[in-house]
Length: 479
View (spheres, rainbow, N blue to C red):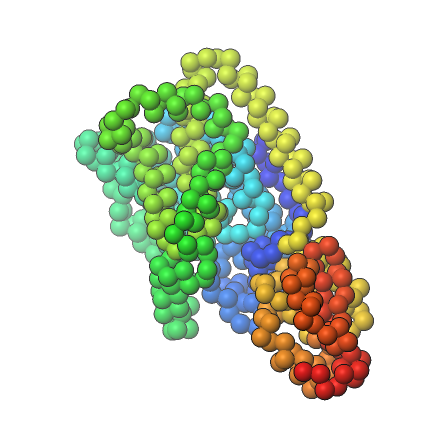
């Protein structure tokens, strides 16, 4: 209930932030508008960077709540609530009675809550990963193959959300399953043929149909979205060697707050009990449950660190595993001292209230990447030029701004494009409007002829450079 309160409170009150939120919201809007949810569209062309399931989720929110922030983010909130319920279930299946504590460690922790408040694929992906994990432990405890089949169905849903990265959830499953088999325990076959068939239907059918219709997609997905993104830093997602420390490090250290704080002493005592690091490593894989938690945290971090595409939200599947580990730790803490039960209850209510207040405050705090605020500021300016072309200098294409301007494209340009834009203003007579950060203008204003380039303040973060017929007539030969 507290997770639901946190997830739903002020979920649509904040404007869409550039760039990820705006891109997903606008792509879903255009895809829904063109009437074919299976082929994501953005500005007149296909947008194949992700499978369509996230866009379908957002479009469903638009149908219920309208084409606005609530419609865009409500699916995230529902996925987050359901993920917390799945963490509760998995905690109980792994360690009897640990479910409530694991749910606290995920559903009221700073990183998962923040991720659910930001529109992206990751919260929906982790829902499917959490479902796959819960179904696996259901298969282990109940000894029924149907749960393995459901696990593969959930992995298929994750594949339709973000592609092969869903298999990060399969790493801890395979690690635990190896130990179960090694110990001779009777557990269902992991590579169940029917389960693999279900995965093929749920996870691969769309890819096959799209490749059949657009054969060039196979090369794009393999060479660019898989190899180029993860091995060569093609999309410039923090490819530098040190980025795992600066991008992933803070999330791993602080993402579980506040629930990791009571466990600091327990963790310190546990580490001091293993002066031999090799012995500590072996202890981490001594039982299937421990192997699941150790492998589920260690192996994905290594893989994601070696890849050249690194964003903080990539750690959300790892946070899922860490929450289960923290839940077990909190359970042991209450068993050693029952006073901790009442303390954790108080922490839960206080934490929930803090998160709700933080989301409410975030809706009113000015931010340079808040596209709703930027749209509100430039709409009165745009009325002066009904016929115009809109650009943004040295930034993303501001799809969130386009969302609020009801489809008016915002094209990214560089300084080298200045002459071309100037010539377009002369040739067409249409006003050429270039948005740029106010901080960027300070570096450029010494080189600008303000008789040609009219500078219009937008807000404290942004300015607009306008080239219209009037300014060009004043200096018709200005180069």
